[in-house]
Amino acid sequence: MSIDRLRYFAAVVETRNIRKAADLVGISPPSMSKAISVLESELGHKLLHADGRGIGITEKGLEIYRSSLSLLDENRRFYERLQTPGRDRKQLRIASFEVFSSYFLSTFFKAEKDFDVLLLEKSPGEIESALLAGTVDVGITYVPSPHSSIEYVEIGSFPMGIFGQKKWDDQTFEEWPFAIPTTELQIYSSDIQSLDMWPKSAPRRLVKYRFELLETALQTARDGISVLHCPTFIAKLQNAAVKSSHQLVPLKTPPGYKTVKAKAYLAVRKGYDVKPLEGKFAKFMRSL
Image 1 (cartoon, rainbow, N blue to C red):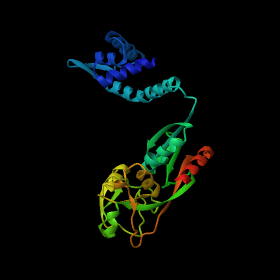
Image 2: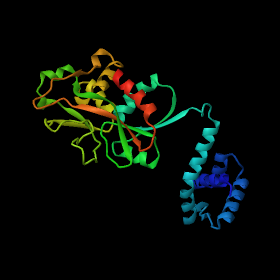
Image 3: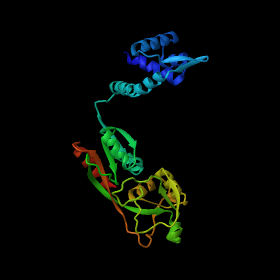
Image 4: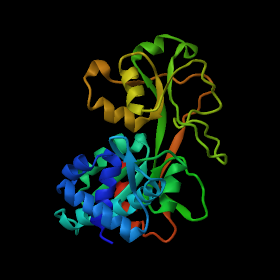
C-alpha cells in the first residue's frame, strides 16, 4: 500500500471534494479518483459514498483517516529530517513553562547555538508526562512532580520577589492588585499551590487578575495596573527590554512574607545522559 494514497485520501476527507483534494496534492481529479479506488481495494473497505451533489466519508473511512494521521505525520517528519540542511546537528526537545521558555531559554539560546531545538509549553506535571511519553528529552521546572521513572538535577536557584510600579509602595499591601497564573498545580506532594510560588504564610488580600500568560501579567504590571510575584531574573530581563518608565521595581515585603528561593531543575527520564546539558544550564543560571 502506497503512503501517497493515504495522503490523497486524507486530502479528500479534509476538503470533502475530489477536485479540491487533487489540486491540493498536485494530481488530476481522475488520478485522485483512481488512487482512492485502488486504496479501497487494498483495504477491503468502501471509503466514500455519494452525499447529495458531493461526497461523504463512510464510518470506516473516517476510522482509517484518523488512524493514518500519526503515520502521515511521521512520514512528513522523516522527509523533513532528510531534506533540511544541518540535520546532523544535535537535537534537543525541551518542555517547560513560560517563566523559562519566554525569558530564560530565549536568552540562553542567544549564547548556546549547539542544538536544533523543539520547545513545548507544558505546565508542571505535564512536563513529566511528556518525558514519559518520549515527546521531549528534557524538562525545565521549579515545581517537580515526582515520578519513579524521572530524576531531577538541580541547575541553580533564584529568589522570587514582588514587582510592580514604584507607586504601589505608597499603598498598603492589602491594596495591591495581584496578577496571578490561572494554572492550577495538580502536585499534591508540594506545599506550593500556585505557579508563581506565593508563600502560604502571607495570604494575598486582593487577587484582581488571573492570566494564562506571564507576558500579559508583566504588561499589566508595566502599565501600573497590577503587581506580581515572579523570579527576580524575569524582572531583570524584562527591564532590559523596556524604557525606564515601564520598568518594574521590587516592592516592600508585607508582614509575614518570607522571601522564597526557588530551585531550578532539569527533569529527565532515568538513564538519560544529562551531564552535557547540566553544566551549560547551570553556568547560564549563575550568570543571571
